[in-house]
Length: 162
Image (cartoon, rainbow, N blue to C red; front, side, top):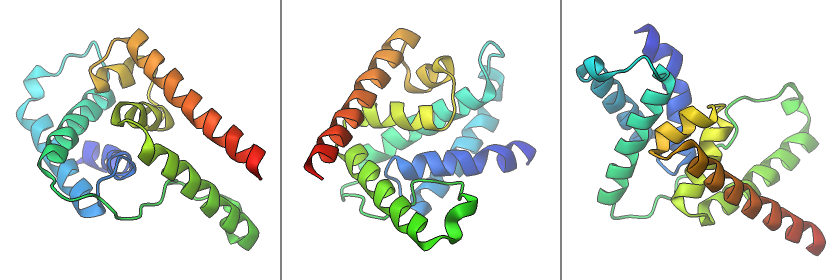
């Protein structure tokens, strides 16, 4: 129960930012923890529990996406930790616009790039994120570098247009 309380909100947010609706993400979180329990003997202490859990949740999400026949259109909030300045209406509008733009760019990226960015945003180390994506650390760094480059070029181009 302690592990669920500690990790489920972060996994839920990660899944939702990867395109799952809240209901789908909650189901995947539950399935991930069921798999953690049933596969607990396979856990190797050479890695972190968090990376192992993200790996399981990512694999379930990928498998579920293969079965989803409809396009996911639920709007999700990109940031899970509201700032103190949320009471400022100008800040809220600016934040909403920025989140919308980032989300739009992420939705246009290949799934691999989107996952790399979101895992980095979750605060996972290169090793943990690479393990969660089933990549070597150097391959993960390359994917993340390319994804960040796409974000930078999009916002640089958008800044020139404004």
